[in-house]
Length: 155
Image 1: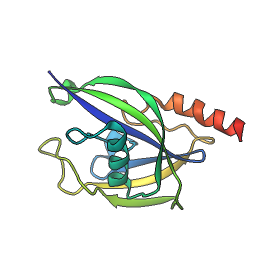
Image 2: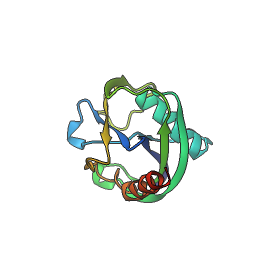
Image 3: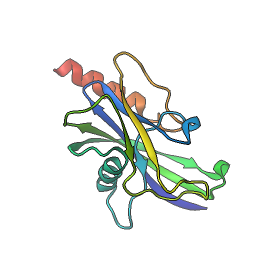
Image 4: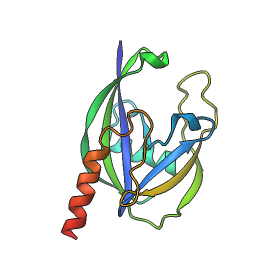
């Protein structure tokens, strides 16, 4: 079985978390930006690049590495184990509440992956609502919530 690194980004602005639905794949549920590092690309650079590509946001800052989990992909017909590395990023720009973005560099995962991938992005205020995320995307959401709570107490 092939092992691949994947990067996942919890992007926050204050207590808000950026999530999206992927047009045509709404059944997957709310997702966070994620993707694969390029050959010999550091994971930290990959998470920043993937986040920009999937959101269109500039002004992202890497805050912390949260941890990793392994995810067997055979139930999706893919003979791989993904080592998912989760990061906390902060968006320091002016953010709209909702927007659509066409992925800058889409990767074809299966034959049914569309050539153009459209994300419907929005912010969820974690102080008001804890979202149910797509399978596995919530692996470090609890750690993120603790970090945000700690940061709020410091401020």
